[in-house]
Image (cartoon, rainbow, N blue to C red; front, side, top):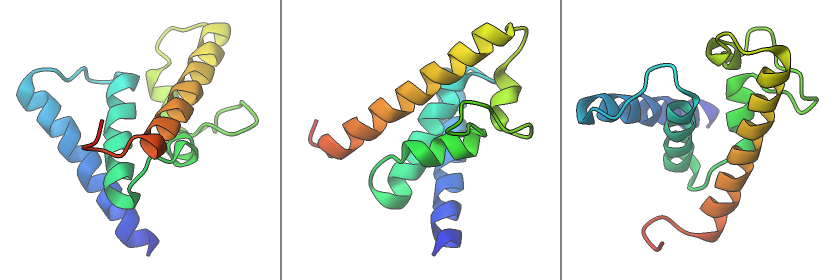
Length: 110
């Protein structure tokens, strides 16, 4: 079952990136684009967004310390430790808000 779900997530995730590039609205290496691509991938796979899955995919642990191999490090750039920690907190908050929205507002009925 997970193979089917993860395949759908990845397929839709990459389709979103491709579509955004074709439309000229993509921002390579931008966390907002990653959040949107994962949002639609997870939505397509299970019908609502799972913030915990997104955090796991990004390498964000519930403890607040990212995994060393997490995708989140690709977006750090020259941020200080403090700024990078704030970025992680904001990303988790955004993911949690998207999860609540996806559960309370069915797509197509907004």
